[in-house]
Amino acid sequence: MREMSSRERVLAALNHQETDRIPIAMVCGGINPPAMQALDKYLRMNRRIDAQTYINSFLDVAEVWVTGDFDQELDMWGVARKEVSYGVGSYSEIVHYPLRDKITLQEIRQYAFPWVKDMQVDLRVGEIKHLRKNSEQAIVLANANLFETSWYMRGFEKAFEDMLLQPDLIHFIMDRVTTFFTDYFYEILKDNYGKDLCFEGGMCVQKVLPFGTIEEVRDECRTLISILGRNGGYLCGPSHFIQAGTPAENIAAYFDEAMGFYPFR
Image (spheres, rainbow, N blue to C red):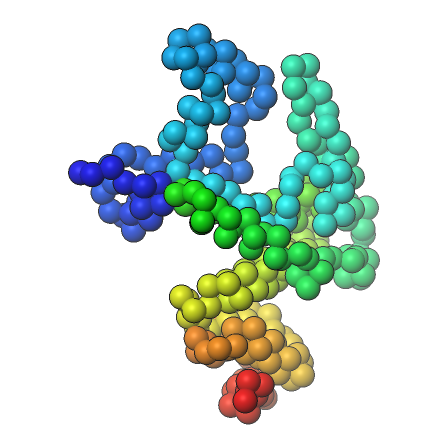
């Protein structure tokens, strides 16, 4: 078998096809500084190569972090971190969980969660385009983690306590995080890869359609069409089966809006 490029190797593996070797990745991972220094010393002494050059020779995946650098002092979710030494190095540890002391659902609802419209999505898109042009590596959008992002705000133990004692609190937090990342990927994919991709579905059948007001249903429909329908490539529909108990007036409002709303004429 011929030698594959990193991107070819990863795509083949994802398609369950044979590759020239196993793809190698360190997504949301890596080698901490002391271990990297030791590896560098070993490689220079025994192979006359530095550690970074060695790693670059086989690493098949480049990662672009969705929300920017992980070690920033205060991130977009309001989570504060600081560097805590373990002697020969340090870890970025959370020192402030912004939702830990919230007691009621109303308090959490009032929290200033981030919105995609407030983000500099173009920065991540620029990283992706740079990597595609200058590297043969496959690209992964990393750190869009539903559970981790939620407990970073709530606290690890508190998040698990909520699951047992106050599930409506952690469910609301996770729902807001999910909505954020869903909207984020809609923006990146449609704006930058719309000519290569098509989308079908999208209407939420777990929350908006069964539990939203008629106007909320119509608004969600308009949002999906406005984002995904621009320049074609979108088939409007529910994300899964519309479940029993979904109000008939919401179902009708959804399809009525889908048939009547088309802002691209």
